[in-house]
Length: 84
Image (tube, rainbow, N blue to C red; front, top):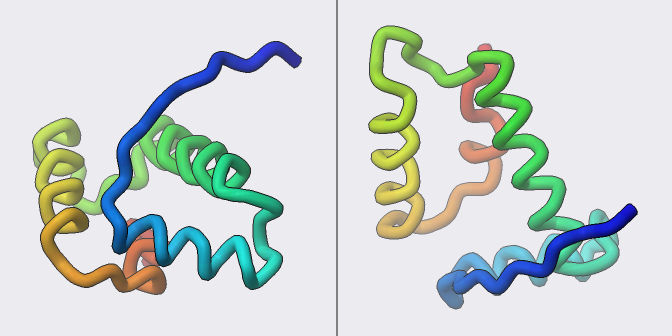
């Protein structure tokens, strides 16, 4: 499978959290973690799992991105986002 190469910038706190997950053995490396996160995001978007379907989903995602960039990271909360 041919893959495109992308360059992204991620803040230090997210990188530290990613490295903890990789070191735990859940993913082989950062790239695997990021690919899985993107897959999950796209899947969630496609099946309409955004919490409040009455809101504009693009606006809600922007709000979530802003919250994640400013607040301490709670991976449990992130992983359970949209679940009942």
